Image 1: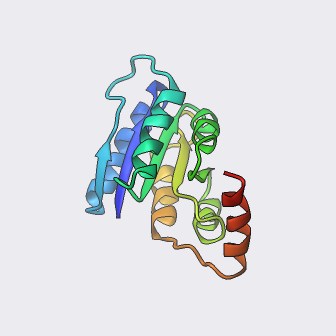
Image 2: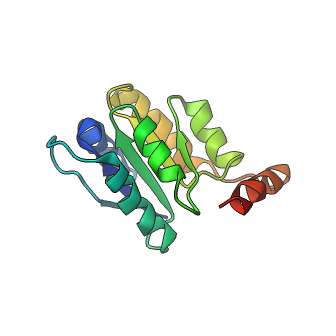
Length: 144
């Protein structure tokens, strides 16, 4: 599984932590920036990362801004993207198992690196359960 990783300035520090986790887990990922805390526009960051998912270069993405709210809103406006803003392990797992989320959004000013690691691991390990959830996800996809 290939993962795209991106953030704005508010998510930079947490992105660096998540990047270390992905490397530790020996997962294939690419860092789409930003690469410092210079102010950046989260809608552009989300659009760039999600475009790489939509065109098939990556299976999933992790996008981080200060709260996670901005990138989740921006990402979910794009057809074919199901972004989940998660602040706990259970929501992260369920976003994959029940909602087939292909983008995890995190808040760099809301959660710390330890919790982000647990959330990210739960999200990466979970798979879409299908079954009754497939019908519901198809309803979402139909509205794209």
